[in-house]
Length: 90
Image (cartoon, rainbow, N blue to C red; front, side):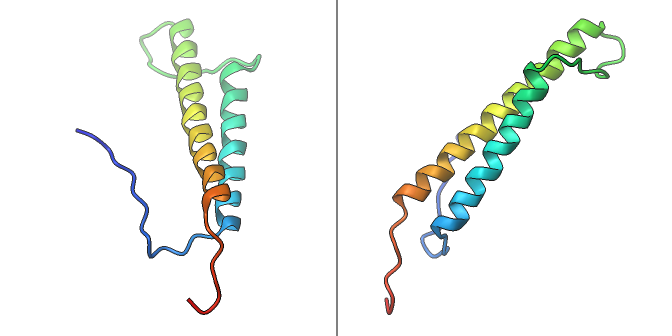
């Protein structure tokens, strides 16, 4: 099974919306990286697993989520620089 991301050519996306999406994605990625690699501990998780395993799994999930958000941020900023300016009357 493969996932293919396509963009609708009829969708009117502007550079401003791509820039805003990129800023939001990078902000969320930064928060996720702070939660994953900061000095705090992550509590909760699987009830029968030791706390060290739960902390590792929580940090790994936050790190993975931050990586995904950062990738979407890079995609949004790629769109900022590659979207063509719309011409008036066409």
